[in-house]
Image 1 (cartoon, rainbow, N blue to C red):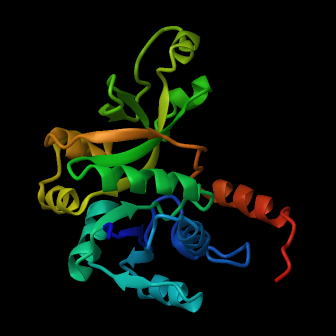
Image 2 (spheres, rainbow, N blue to C red):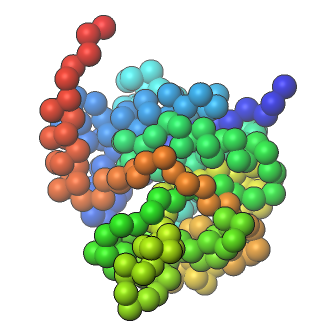
Length: 251
């Protein structure tokens, strides 16, 4: 019998740019519910749990019959929150799913699940090709460069790799946008969450750099589609408008 895979969605109430983001409900569903329902569709995910520091978020998840666990408010990253739940429930392999990406592709979660079940010594994550120079220059868009075996060399908010001609980078398929989904074999998650925060992690505000700074390899898989995160009120309004335009399905 193969090891089970649990998708854990870290969700905190406080957000610098969009407070109480998981509880936004202009679409008729909580934002966290959209994410939860997408994760449930993944065929290789056996269980979905929201990990939150807020009783209000836990109550919202339970209102749509989802599973939620309360965590400490002191965690410095989503993976640290995920790790608390994984330890408490003695879970096996875990996928950390961002709580503000309501259009994530369940097939991408299956790709990550397959990667961590086949290798118990490295993290798996996702990336898509970046096609717009403006996004490459945008510090809110995280970029990743990989080696010849598809493992991450570095993640940055800066435009990497650098070239004066962006089109030459595109032609070489060298510009990748990181999609913030992480798959952790159990022992790797335990190690990651026991490590101190890295210098580069703190400078770039990217938790995945903790793994690279401590020698944990990260395999970067090609995502089937770009998952657009909700970072600002404008992002959420665009998502809500898009949802309003979708045909309703009859039950």
